[in-house]
Image 1 (spheres, rainbow, N blue to C red):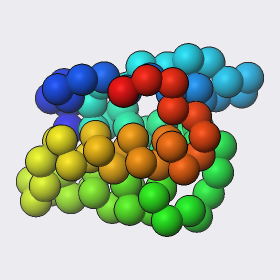
Image 2: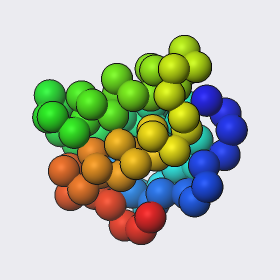
Image 3: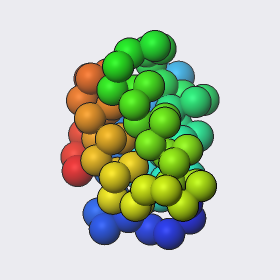
Length: 81
């Protein structure tokens, strides 16, 4: 979960929103749990499940990255990928 992704993902999160670079599955998990602007949306729920699978060694980090990007698009906070 601490292994850097192939490419970082930049999102606007926090209060007030700040441009934040996410580079690992662990950072993505924390961002979605602590700072996400929406709750209980399909892409967010899926991304959280995939991140949990990565932590258990059942999925690849790139799967988490792609799911995180989809959740960021859903929330309207994606700056760059």
